[in-house]
Amino acid sequence: MKYDAFEEIGRGLEFVPRADVYRTPGGWVVKFDLAGVKPQDIQVEMHGSVLRVVGVRRDSFIERGFRHHSMEISYSRFERTLRLPCTAETASVTTEYLDGLLIVTIDTGE
Image (cartoon, rainbow, N blue to C red; front, top):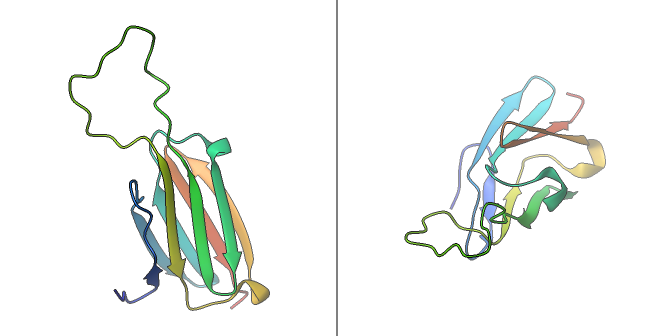
């Protein structure tokens, strides 16, 4: 499946976070919806033009004696991989976690 700014590669099986991709004057910003995921449970990698975010969303609310009645939120390992029109060799990658959003900034120096 192709998009204007990126190409998606191999989806994870259970929980696939949604992403917004922005072109900036100096590179790219990719914003991932990771509500309920702790920053320490996220790993970001960029190899060549492939940006990969993996981690796990855990149900930390559950307590002894709880039984679920209805569950619509996925608590599992996740992965999202995108191919961007830039490469890691010529870019610096920084991350920020803000209000349930992982923000990956890719500065290509353009």
